[in-house]
Picture (cartoon, rainbow, N blue to C red):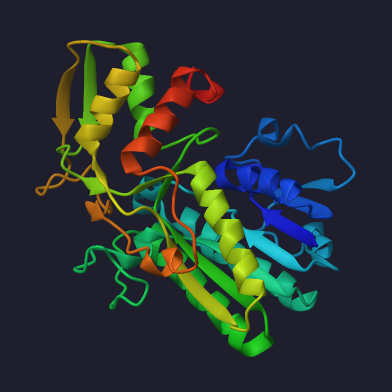
Length: 325
């Protein structure tokens, strides 16, 4: 199979590329503008015949990247601006990097008659869900960030293209994915701060924020599992939650980071920016996905949320995240 991976030099995208190679995909084309990804993430593949890197911006609908979709069977659309906080202060960035870019990818799929698209969506589409854990059929979907709104809009565009043009589509609503090659998030924030000052840790929010975390190897494994199941079926569009059965508080994450770094007597200070203790406006305070639909396909995560956090911290401490040094 010939596949395009947008954002393939980024965090999840580059791990997905590694897995596609292991699965024997004949040709893998990565399209990335390197705004958040790095060539180092795909260095193992750069000189291989099966691999093509196209440095291009998906916001440019007339860019030459569109031609690389010709003869492609599957598109894994993982290119996005992942910073939720940025979407609050500069919403135009997320409209362009996430929604406009997705529209252009869909047009490239339509033009070149791509068979399948897998979209990296997000738990943020649910907003402040009243049902926890939250199933895929939860309603109404009311995102509280522009990031979440753009992800939901992308899902709607994709499902419409499925109905109109026969592009079979799979939207995956990920929990917080963590692990090597990530360059943002609470764990990296904590490690950076503690490397500067091992005696004190400032925590955004009141520390009671509670969310589900998924280790990167589990996230990629679930992605390929669902993709192979999907192409073997007959549905035009499917949505799955991809997460964990449990969740963990921000304070518990801080405790794990401190323990794994071998620190003692660290003083915590909390910095809530909203009356109910969030870390920033637009931050969903409580998130736990119902993954019973995913588990019904025969897949379960290897690591629980705390285990995922611990593995990610160990990778950081062992300098597998060079950007945090």
